[in-house]
Amino acid sequence: MIRLILSRIGQGAITLFVLITLTFFLVRAMPGSPYAEEKAIPEHALKRMKEYTGLDQPIPIQYFRYLKNLIVHQDLGDLIKKDGVKVSEVIGQSFPVSLSLGLLSISIALMIGIPAGVIAAVKKNTYIDYICLTCAMIGICLPSFVIGPLLAVAVGLSLKSINVAGWSSPGDWILPAFTLGLINAAYLARLARGGMLDVLSQDYIRTAKAKGAPSTRIVIRHALRGGLIPAVAFIGPAFAGMISGSFVIETIFQVPGMGQHFVNAATDREFFLIQGLVLFYGFLIVGANLLADLAQIALNPRLRKA
Image (tube, rainbow, N blue to C red; front, side, top):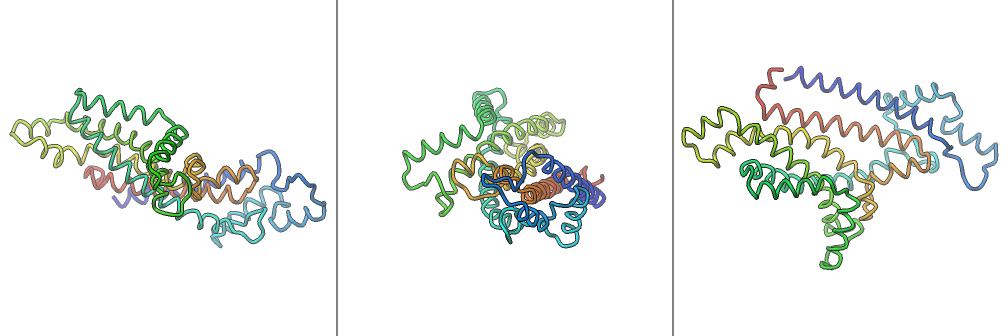
């Protein structure tokens, strides 16, 4: 088990290094310049600005300088167009909002998706199963930019106590969290159903049924632990994706989270902000996958021998 964890940590470190490298060179291959403005900047001022940010140096030197600052000083750099504003400050201000949204969304997804998938598997080929599968397929097929406005219009017209935009009170959290939660609940339902069906077809389940064990006991004590492994594997990266935020959801409901910074940074050619956000998102993915692996080990004892 320890060897497996160390292997996952090593793979994660390599992944982050490759991610940093690819992001660094790709953002500098983008057309345009972070200093491109409608009003022309004097040549001497532009030169000083590039010297201050280090963008006047050759690309390889910039790369090794960025790695040095990142590894030695844990510095993600400064915003190019805002003097004195660090990338870490931007992430630090928006991350709590994204974390709150992610926790609420994954809670909603778990409360809806897991029970729906388990019930659909237990009631296989019945109308309950067909209803759950249909709802899950609708949730997978409908994109967030369709579900979000529909919920906003429906709730905004019927429930005046819930705001459809902003992030100033707990009532503002419901709609964006519910939108993200519904999308991931659909995937969880299908994964939970597939995992449960696979376990329910095993010999030890048939043996338990032959001995007269109650159906509820079979599902909860024998099938649930192994049947949820596919869903648990999905929860890790899905949770990281929710934390990083969805630009569409944040735009629809005016949520000041991390997702909006991705597009704004690309539009403004904020190289260091793009690199910092991608690195932070990659770190979340690696960490969430590691936690998902540990959860799978807890559910499946055979993995502890790996």
